[in-house]
Image (cartoon, rainbow, N blue to C red):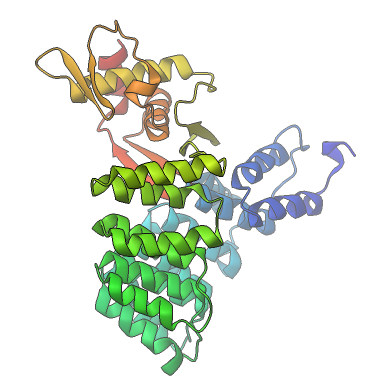
Length: 399
């Protein structure tokens, strides 16, 4: 069947399938094709836009999401009556860091569901505003809306990220006694993360031992991550032993344990972990970062040369490295040690360490006049680079 003969129902089915299965980049590409010549210029409806906004929230694709919002305002004037669409828009703004806009949309909703509250609570929590997330949760309960398991995950995660140990313990204890909710593995993972960040590693161990169900890799991984923060080898080794039994092919856990050994000067431990990785045929996957430009999401891997603008991107990264690390003795200090200046503008990628975030930021600086470039690392970590006037910096760097 040619693309132009597919109707909105067909497009919505495939868009929704991609969005719900974590294929956000593909979902946005399908949306672009649907609205363009390839798809016969099919007009999106509310169902389409929910899937697209979900994908934008997942990727941090602000440009596409803002375009969807403009379309809604111009072509769907009654969209505020569609709760699912409004919830998707709140979730998009909240996850992309535009909390004031998410709050405004929330305030303007004639009716609010548990999904509306949870989107806002989660957004404030993931951006470090745990106190606001807690206040919203309390306001939700006072409005007579009973929290569900998803809302509790958002709240506990908010407490964890903000270091609100006492509040997190209180709400976790209240799940069954007050809200008649039985904690799931996700809630226990949040609590282990909360306790671990607070340095209460023994307490986190005890919580895992008291769980009514077997701990999964995420729970033990949260404890292992906390051991990395606090450089605790003993508990880290216990967590590592459990987690590699549950997820033997997850290379991230091996890297975490190796880093714990490195941080504590136990190089024999590093050698053991690396030997385990070799025996099991595991290699550390290169980091990846995303940046959006003109409605498309661009993916960068560490030391990646596949992008059409790779040459210019690498030239800019090297110039930026020189600007921020140049020493008075004619050498350049890098994350991999010192490198002689006499490379005539050419530095080997393994020495300079072309991390995916650096490549994404350089691409953003080359292709936008915005004062803020948003980089999404591994689809989760948002890093905002405020450049003042990006265009001005480019003039001075590249001439």
